[in-house]
Structures are given as C-alpha cells and as structure tokens.
Image (cartoon, rainbow, N blue to C red; front, side):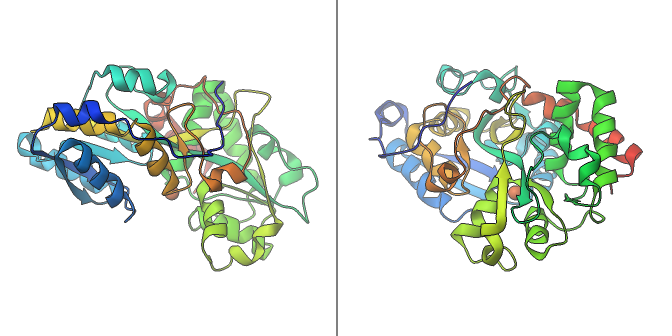
Length: 340
Ligand code: FE2
C-alpha cells in the first residue's frame, strides 16, 4: 500500500540531467488529453531539454486509427490516453512499442506499468461510489454491495459502451473471476434506477435531482462540481457523499492516464526524454492537477481537489494491465446481462 501525502510546497525542479543530454530537436505527441494548461507543462519540458513538443489532440480511437493508417511513416513519437482499456486497443493495433527506462521503472510502481514496458501510468483516476446524504444512511461500502437488494431501483451508472465501466468490470473479472463478475453486472442491471444514459456528470446530477440515490462515477467529475459552476451539480453538491470502495478488501479501483512510445517513433531519444520527464515531480504534480487526478509516482503531494476526498487504499494488487487484457470478456458479460 502506498499513501498519498498532502502537498505543502512545490519542490524545486531537478531536470538538469535531461537538459545536459538533449539537443535541439522535437517530439510529436498524439494525445487524447486536452487541457489548455498542459501547454505550460510541455513548455517547461522544452525549456529544460531544448526539445520542441508538437501536439496533435483527438479522441483516442481516432488517434489509434490514424497511427495505424500512417504506419511506418507516422510522425507520432508518444501516445497519451486516459484509460488503460484504450491503451490495450493501441497495443492490439501494434502502434506502441516497449520502452525500457530505469527512470520510469524506478518511479512508477509495477502494477501501474505494462509488464513488458509497453506503457506506464502518469496519473490515476478513481471510480467510486457516490450517494445522496439525505436519503442514504448506510451507503454501500464495496462494489459488490451495490448489487444488494436494498438498492433496487436506486443506482445510476452510465452505459456499458463506456470504457470506464469496461475497465471496472475487467478489474472485477481479474480479482473475483468471470462468474462472479457476471453476477455482479447482472446485479447492477437489476438495481438500476433508469436505463443508462449520459456521462459521469449526469449520474451525479441524478443524485441532485433525486432520480437516483447512488451513483458510480470517476472522482474528478465530482470535484469539478466544486471548481466550476456545473449546472445541475454544483448547487446540490453538498448533499452528495462519497465512499472509497473495498477499503477492507482489495482497495478502490483506479484507472490510469497512461503514456507510451509509438511503434514507429522517428524521434525515440526525444520521446524517451519526454516520457521520463512525465515521471518527474514537477510533471507529476502539474499533470495530475489539471484534472484533479492522483499522481502515479508515490510520495508526490496531492492537489487541493483530491486532498478533499481524504485518504484511501487503492487497489494495488490487481494489475492495471488486466483491464485491457480482460476487455473482451467484460464486453461479452455486459452483452449477456443486458447492460445497455
Ligand atoms: Fe473522464
């Protein structure tokens, strides 16, 4: 188990090694992350390394298709996506390659890296349980407990085509076996307050509107309700409570924003430098903060948003690589139990 510490100060940069090895050059990033403020992060990398960063942003599946179509001529050096299920699709498409780096291996815990170094986690997002404080006295404490008869007609969760749910189910397959995972999925369907609709924010809005008492969502959609005025959420956010699931078991399910070197990288040295930079304290803090995420590197302080959610035990026993390895099985189970 590793603990997240609350940040008190931003530590000084120690990127001189990078600066010493880098030459005037460039690196091309295909990213499904799109925060304007990431510009500052890449500018910092350029400042310390002399390497210019060119970014192409798009939906992960489109970027994977683009890299496949470009083949050996693809200018892409680095691929970044916000769900390991999608990184699995990149692996299947053959558009990423292993990167063996002591810097990354030493910084990122093994369960957040691909076993053959095909990719590594940069930041973490938790998929947890939310509830209406005024209508739920004893909220479910585990993913499994969401299937209890008590919650019949009370749970909101988005559709099975959503990759966050696919990765959650894939983790349950890994931890509990396919049979139990199928029972779990059937149990969730039986307890749904409505047919799955909308994104994670809409599940939280449904707690505010009273349409459901329990919701499953990624943690940052909730935190966004404090940072911004989100219609239908921010005004009622004080009535939403959260549960870190499975705290006396395997821990809470966390997914990853992950990065990889592309298979045809024309600038592999620069790609390696950028990927290693992403594990630095500066990049870890900055990258995580853009979306209220948790750093992948242990010991890095938390931003204000995640600190609000308190300490928790993450699932460090289920390898993240299993989320993509079990993706097809998860889809089959969703189809079988009729999770729309
Ligand atoms: Fe998201």
